[in-house]
Structures are given as C-alpha cells and as structure tokens.
Image 1 (spheres, helix red, strand yellow):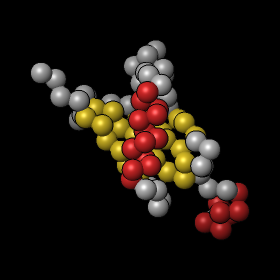
Image 2 (image 1 turned 180 degrees about the horizontal axis):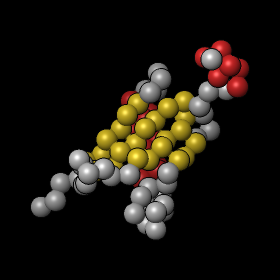
Image 3 (image 1 turned 90 degrees about the vertical axis):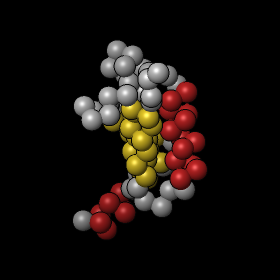
Length: 81
C-alpha cells in the first residue's frame, strides 16, 4: 500500500483551518499543471491569501507540498523594505 502525504507550510497569521480549506479547494481542482502531474502552481483567493504548490521532491516523492501566505499590498511591501 502506497502512503501519500500532504504538507502545508503556513505563513503570516493565517488560521490553520482556513489554510487547510484553501488547499483542499486547490486539490479539488485536480492536477492541472505540469501536464497533469501537479496541482495548480499558484492560486490567489479573494481574501488576499495565496496557495503555492511545490512539486514533489526526492525526499518525499509521494507527497504534495503547499505554501499558504497573505499577499502584501503595495503599502505593506514598501514598509517592509
């Protein structure tokens, strides 16, 4: 039996339950990138939260990894510099 793993890295102050919900929405869309091998590379939602897909690495070949973070507005990006 093959074991699958889903890794989610959450940045900013995003609620983990929301992060899981958004990743599930990306996964529900199916594997649409890389000739059907990967989930959508990047999805931005209306609440300015973005989900980025990281392809499987050599360490975890049977896993899908996602990064969830908030998009910074221009003003916030300038303040961070």
